[in-house]
Amino acid sequence: MPLFLRIKSILPVVILLSISILSGGITPHRVVASRLDVGKAQQDIDLYRKGNATIKIIDEAGNLLSSLNLSYAQVSHDFLFGVGVTNSEYPSYYELPVFALLKDAGVNYALPYLTWKLTTESSDWIEQAYKPRELRDMGFTLIGHCLVWFYDEYGNLPAYAKQLSFEELKKEVRAHVSDVVARYKDWISIWNINEPNFQYTNSLNLTETQWVEICKTASEAIKEAQPDGRVLMNMLPADVPHIDYYPIKFLKRLVAEGVQFDIIGLELYGHERTSSVPLDGNGYPQLTWVSKRLDEFSRLGKPVFLSEIGVPSKPSEETQAEWLKQVYTLAFNKPYVQSITWYNIYAPKSDPFYPDSGLFRAVNPSPEPKLAYYAHKELVSQWTTTGTGNTDENGTLHFRGYAGEYVISVAGYENSTIHVSEGKENVYNLVLKALTKPPVSTTSTIAATAVASAGTPFEPGQWLYAGIVVVTVATSAVIMAVRRRRSEKAKVF
Image 1 (cartoon, rainbow, N blue to C red):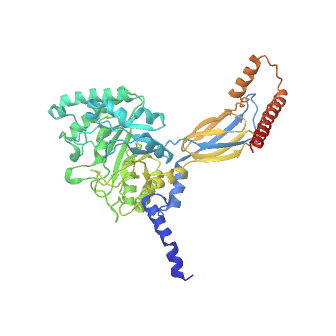
Image 2 (cartoon, rainbow, N blue to C red; image 1 turned 90 degrees about the vertical axis):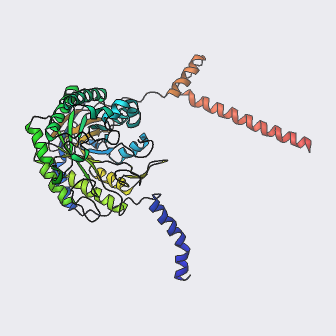
């Protein structure tokens, strides 16, 4: 067959396969290689993000168990890989199957949107839409996002807020924050004071000094309602001189004036969605600048969260996924960074803030992950530790792994759980408990009870004989029925 005819014969298949890949039916779970020095970055990650684990295995009698084969599998991460929970399309939230997919991709942190207006006027809707109880039960760590945010858009401020004097405002903030934290503290452990002293979202026109007082008032209310709760001060990363915005300077003032906050949050978006951030040729934040700026914020001595980040799948899904891998790898190899949140799960073309910047192409009627979703899943999988090994003559096994919870499994014994903290020596003495014999099946128990109650004293060895008898009788009945049928047919003909 001529070559052009061979090509023509397979062309429809090639076209269909291409359409399927582009539409997401067949997803090529590979992304363009990172421009970072991945080898060097991974060396730093191994150094900073892992801890040493030493496990000594003992049986219930106190004997050391040497040459014992065991497996260890990481089942959670201390590092927080997050997503926002807002959706600009009706019904403005996501159903639990979407979060199950996100959890499968390594996401363990979510940002319920708890603004002043929503929490006072729509508290029942919040629990239905943002599902704090259900997400917590699924293993997500939660932050009360935008608990304090004085931007008069997106349902943030109640109408009366603009009518308050500053002293009245402080009293209202204290009362409101106390109420919200008390209401959700069983599920939420981190609380966000969002974009303080940033002119573009300062709808109440507060001065810098007034913002310091608001931050202090809100932080005190959080700590009083939840002493172990953590306060995140969410900032934009770049200086914006023309509006006199200098985030590091402001955070230093908060520290100097005794404002209690635990975490520095930084927003990072492309295409000038974050003021004054240098961009690359795709309109994405330049990673060299990001790295330098993160280091500058770290000098304040507090953990840093990349609290909201995102870029769109333009010019392509590949470029979006590549940037995700680069920025996550960059942040993960800095020991003071403790969380990264890709804010948009889904952002349609109609999204008012940042179209096409989500991890999904669609969520209804069924979720369609983008390449960025698979890039996220791939990274977290790489940063998850599993393995097997044998205990030495002292009953001890050593391994090094990423920070989080681990299940220790040994054949014939109940599983045990340990926690590995990064940068530490984690030493455990585990007493293994032998598995008990499996119980008799319910079906067998019911059958034996029924026979016994009928007065038939069967011994265990007689069950086989009884079964043979039943099968023989049934077979004989079938044979007799067939012969009778044949005999009847013979009479007819």
